Length: 216
Length: 242
Image (cartoon, rainbow over all chains, first blue to last red; front, side, top):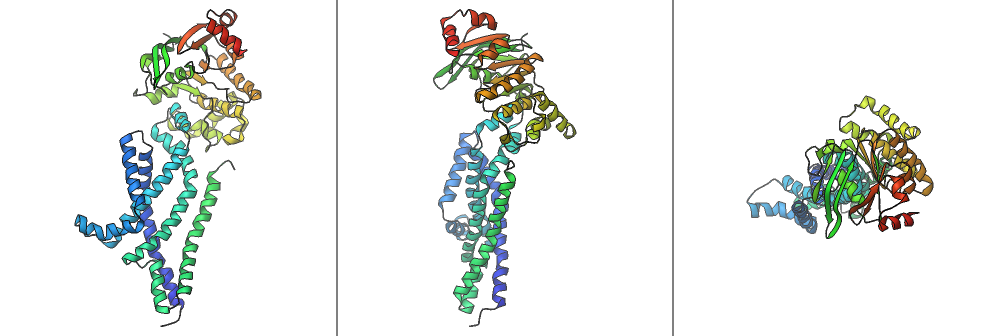
C-alpha cells in the first residue's frame, strides 16, 4: 500500500485520452450516420422511414453494455470475425450515438414547420437547398440542448469500456483506488474530472444557443 | 394564348371533391380575384397553379407549359411564379436581406456583389428599405408580409399568386399590404388573388371569379358582378361579406 500521490492524479488525467478517443470516434462515425437516420426518418418513402425507425428502435432498446458485449465477444462467435477491441468498441459506440442523435435530430427537423419547406420550394430551390439553407439551420438550433445532453451521456458512457479492458478514466480510478486504498478520494477525483469535461460543453451549448438565436 | 389556362381541373383530398371541373383563363397583366366561402376550393386551385398540389384530372398550363408536380423543370417554373401565403412563411433564422437574396443567389439569378442592391431595390418597392438588417420577428405582421412580397419580387416573377395574403393580419395592418399589392397591379403584374377583401376585389381587380362547391360559379368584371349577381349563391355571399 502507498499513499495517494501526484503520480496517481497524473495517471487519472492521462487515462482521459481514452475517454476522449472513444468520444471522438463515436462522434466521427456516429454523427454522419445519425444525420442519415434522421433524414431517412423524415423521408417521403415509407419503406425507408420504417427501416430507419426499426434500426433505431433495436439499438435504443439494447443497453449500451449489451452493445459493447455483442461486438466484443459476439462478433467472433456469431460472425467468425476476430476484430481488435478498439474496433469492436468503436462500432458499439458509433451505433449507440447514431441511434440517439438520429432521433434527437429527427425531432429537430420535424419541429420546423412544413410551410418552411414549401416556402423554399416556391422560390425554386431544390429539396437539398431547402434542407441545407432553411430547414437544417433551424433544426440545429432546436436540437442543440438535447444534442449536448447526449454528448454528456456519451462521455460518461465511455466508462463502460473499462469492462473490456480500456484504461479510460473510470478504469484508471479503479486501478488507483486499488493501489492506494483511498477509494473515496480517488472516485471523488474521477467524478471531478468528468465534471470538468462536461461543464464546459454545457456552457458552450448555452452560448451557442444564444448566438444561433439571431434575433436576440 | 392566355398566361394561365386551367381546363376542367379536378382535385380530391381523400373522399372530398375539392375541385369539380374548374376552367379559367387569366391573361397577361390581368388581376383576377377569386372569392367564395371557405371550402369552396379557391386556395386549392391557387396551390395547383404552382404545383404545390397535383391535379387529379384536367390540366393547367402556364405560359403554354403544362404544370404538374413531377415536371422536370419545376424549379425553373417556380422561379417565375411568386406565391404569398397567409402565414408569410419568412425564414426566421435569416435577416430580411438574406430572406430576400437566398433564392436569387442559390438559383444563380444574381451574384453576391449584386445581392444587397437587389434586396434594397425590392424592399424600396414595398416601402421597407430601412428594415433590410432586421430579423423577421422584429417586424409587424404587415411588414413581414411586405417582406414576403419583396422576396417574391426579387425573383422577377411573371405571375404572382396571393393566398389570403391579408387574412392573418390585424385590421389596421391590412391597408399597408393592400397598398403594395395595388402598386404591383398598376405596374402590370399578372396577379391571381384569393381574398376576403371585397374592397380590393371591387377596386383593383379586372375580374372577379366566384367559386362555389368546387366550381367556378360565376365570373365577370367587379362592378357588374357586385351590382347584379346572376346566381342566388353569389347574391347571398355578397350580402354576407358586407
